[in-house]
Image: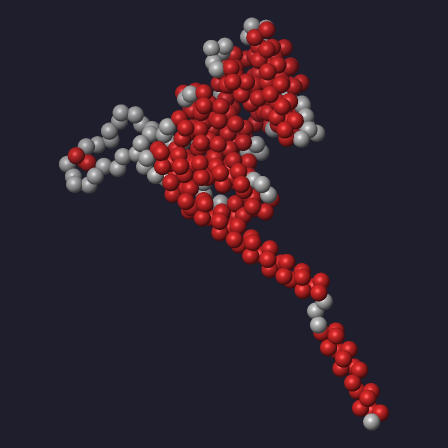
Length: 301
């Protein structure tokens, strides 16, 4: 009897040690829930991308506008957290979900006006495929989408370079209206961040001269001139912070184009707000851009 009594306690101890603790069980459940939520979010991102890209490839401008609005809405929601940004970056490794090629193949594609390659469509039964030209709103939306892609997904700047993004945008800046020009300046900054190839293209296209011509012209819309001032401030601030070799002569270019006093003001004002929060930085940027315009008007540049 004594030996039987002594055999029971070890069995009870073994059962206790094999049972998982409540903390470990909760951790496993939490990981499972996070995994399911991530899969759900990824599915939602891919569905929204697919729907937006499908419309963005349409033959009619109003459909492409609808698709671009969908893509822009998606980018704004994706930018809310690092986890969703990572999921979006994963989708851009898939060819059928890449955004940048669609932008340059459709909305930002340069149209050949009044040019007919051949008359084969007249003598055949196959209908001729017609594509409506990009509207002002469509180009502006496409530029906003391009800007968002480049800011969220750095590899998009490399992909955009393959489609000669800087020459295309410089053409828009010199030929389109105020709406597209303002969006173009924002997209140019996003394209050139940490992209030596795009910076070199900007220099090749005489980008500083184009921007300087706009900001000097008092007949140009004042909001666009302000946007040019903001562009120069952001560009100079980024160059000084990163010591970008392709843009090494930009200080001399601005001094030559806008004068010594305005160039000095732009350099000093570009050093603003590195410790400010985003809203304060934006306010400071507007104020400094206004001062740049006032200096240009004051010194008669």
